[in-house]
Length: 404
Image 1 (cartoon, one colour):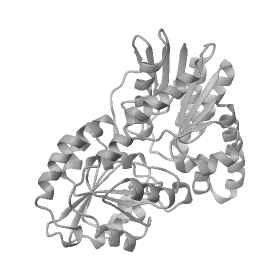
Image 2 (image 1 turned 30 degrees about the vertical axis):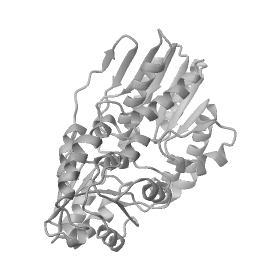
Image 3 (image 1 turned 90 degrees about the vertical axis):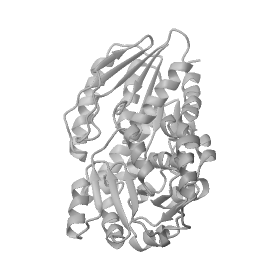
């Protein structure tokens, strides 16, 4: 069997899509029939302009071939990301022209990789498996000028409908997506394999983190409201419109300037806006650092007192499960999360010692901050339920079922 896998991000790039794709490839290599081959067409690391990682444009092993397409540097803006994707799509179409595949897999957050996968599958007259990580149509009102929204939604809605109905199986990365997709595509077969906790974090929960938790808890106080030392609050991840850090971090950091220091590790299209807002509000207790490898990030998690997460107060973010949430939960650290709707319910029902507040609401954030317990808590049950390797094994079983 010959399988094609399209993913815009792949190891060693830093992104949720990269980590997910790498895990799925590993699972597929253990599940595909004997003498099968898996071709991955992706890009060279390009998630952040401030982060570079060396990777070969072409890698080949016994049954895996990885093609990485070089792209121009970009600042995560919509226009330059669109140009980068067009270059990727042209190379994919050229590279797959004349090839035959038994199955095409595409994982997509902004819809177009799914559309590209559907086109390649149609041209090859083969089956298609889609992994949808976001609802792009619901993002459009926040991305397009008002005069273009109606046309954009109709245009991309038609592309979404064509890609979804072309697929044999569509996986949704969040159960929250069901309310959008199932009514629109009632005859489509959907599965729900979420993001999860990667081994670099899950394998440490019962050892390194829990050992440190025991040490900390023996000297801890009940909550942050009575803390006498300066607290260290860490955010690690993308700094984009979806996170809305510029709308929350200056306010909470200013109000906590006598109690806490904030560290932001990451980059993205809204970093300059965040830095401007911090300057304008006279905030001195926020340190923004460049992205780093996840192994290095473990040390930063160890040093933090609380982990911060925030999604902008836009309706399109009410259905997601942020991939960073799984990583945070595995550390045992207290989590301070600005989320709502389905996302808030998921947090409250599944994760202990998490303070959930209304996004972009400084007063709500500070109220919940003081309710957190300083004591670190092992979340082994959550980690075991959402181990990435276990989730990807089940996902790989669904993919392989299409080859039988």
